[in-house]
Length: 138
Image (cartoon, rainbow, N blue to C red; front, top):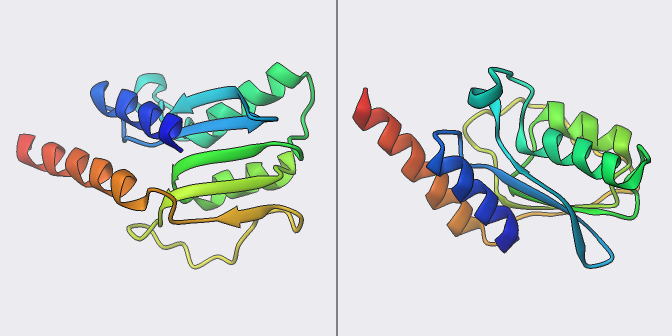
């Protein structure tokens, strides 16, 4: 999770919403990313989506059932859908998504293990700091 937080800080430093993600296979990071929605002018360029693509390219396969995603914020429904189709083995997230409640049931693959709240305070504070800074500039 610390590596995902480093990615989130990297995003923060570049004016992106500070969400970071890494995908691990056999204790090795095979993909890392952060939000790129501003940089790419693409609302789908979430950290998780970027990491899924990078991991699939690394493996040369579309299924990530032996992998674990570490992400600093609970995935949104779009990212959950992509994680479902990738059949990711595990998802570990930091902060719970409370700002945008989509009122949808979990869309993870039935075999995906999910653990939330890992280093939650660190992830939450980074996101809060980002939006406080954005509001003060407007």
